Length: 421
Image (cartoon, rainbow, N blue to C red; front, top):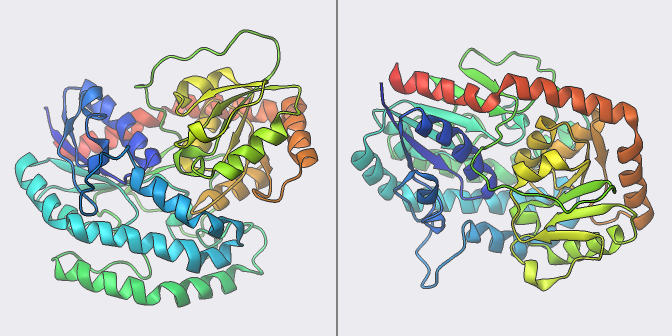
């Protein structure tokens, strides 16, 4: 039975690519797939075979914006905050980010209601970290996707989300949680009041998004996941990875040297000073690097032992490299695990600190200080992970298990069951 699936992803590459991967499976199964993505994605989703019925998260600009341009600009303006400890980022970055997301949800609420009336979906899929009441009050059931670190799903026995704190050392957890409540309680209460005024249920305590009573998906492999004190209920389904099949082919230049993939993501790549610092350090290595240069690619040059472009087909690059140097975004971390690649992680913001810590403490890579690493530390980490046979063997075995689990189709199966059930 053909169904209509409406995807509402956050306007960043990670969540949107996540939905593209699952949506493509559903489209090829004969379902109608519509994206209510942010307007700067216009044309990009239609080119992949999807319907577009897009929204504005702010008053439209007079000039054409690149996909996800709002968040590129936002990160560039707030980049100095990334040099601070995570507890200080709560004031300077995390709260302003929530505020920006809330402002977008409020602005597009009328548009979303009109889209739902036009599309008449059988299921709505939300990959967002804030609530959109129009999605919750529609007649169709909704599926929530958590495509960030699973600490987004609270558990008192686990480290607080956004903290990057170790799972085995609780001494700083209480102080971080107290600071989060101090800086976010009023914002949460005001948003909760607005959500209820739109006809949606109250938000969970100090959370900005609802869990679906029908089905929820989270993208994270068991190898990195946390030991919960309370098991997730039957509405939750794990996608160990979600590797889209829509990207162009890519071939690395020939040669015997080891290859390292370098990507700080579409947003981290906007920090040009950090990208220049990385190029400077890695230029001294005997190894070769393929670099995803990011949205400001024209503002710096690569070294002689590097190739790259502003955007690379990541899922086609990863199988060909030996090591991944990443910002710790959930997409890149889970895709690196999918292909069995160890990681060096340089976290910047949001859940990247949590992913970096988890990769480090589970032994699948090394976390370095993003702004204070020395050339010696960086080069030593690269050399170690390229030669440590135990780490490489564990990563390869994990990748084989994750690929066999086929998370992309597992997620599509859950959404399809809700849509046709």
